[in-house]
Figure 1 (tube, rainbow, N blue to C red):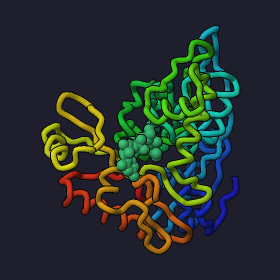
Figure 2: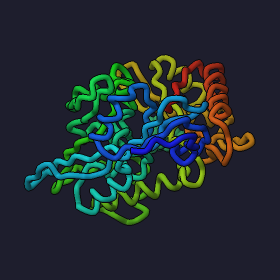
Figure 3: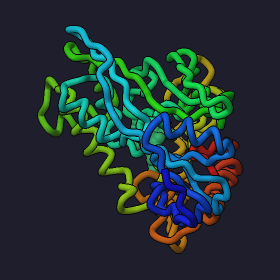
Length: 335
Ligand code: EPU
């Protein structure tokens, strides 16, 4: 365990923002983490760096969670129970599950980040949320160094939300996530329009989990920028939920407004649509801007600063408030 001095975090966050870490350490085991926490409790945790916007240098010790490993806890004819350590890359793990014909995660293909952070914001795409497959999350309590186990219900999952964004925020380091996946009779979720269309284009009538994963990869690649090429953090905002009355009023003015019904009185509206209607889609300001194919994604074309991107986000929020009287909530962690 070597503590390095003055490291640039540019290659450790998918936005590709350069800030300086005064001290930096990479952790490869739970034991190392427990030893470190005996000495240092005021730490800055870094995993895949896929859901953060760095706006300033980090003075705290940056702890890079690099604990790897996948284990099969048990299996029967129908199901497999896996535990995956936090530092495994999400998409590489997912491709491995597909290669083993373990079903359940295929709709979540190509989401950036590591396994350890997937429960924090309850990653979701194309009709599936990771909470549907998680059985347990293990974490080290920073204060005591104890390993604590959270059952699925104890994680208090919601839309892009969990206990780790609320009560438990900053108190734990997630070290592993356990999943229940299917070996046979996979419960496929192809109801999302874009998946249906992609499977039709490929003339696939009875899709396998690999077919679905491949379709999702194609859809994402066509809409979302690859962080290796253009820095970004996926959806920068959450899709806002508004009242039915407000939605009806909006629909009069914008008959084509897309929507998803949440409950009898609540409607979710795509933030990407609101941002596009406000004229921001594809706008570039110097080295940063709004992605040309999905307005929900803010991008760094090279050397933008986190402050510049944050300012653009605030500008978008104010414009949406004025134009639609809707509060857009930022989904990415602003550091
Ligand atoms: N839309 C626009 N303009 C845009 C973007 C979207 O009009 O620039 C419209 C689309 O035409 C469509 C609707 O908005 O009618 C929904 O768009 P899309 O299917 O792309 O989904 P989204 O609601 O914008 C959410 C997730 C994505 C996830 C997709 C697919 C959130 C905040 N985002 O986006 O998640 O991939 O659904 O399931 O819920 C992420 O979290 O990083 C992420 C990419």
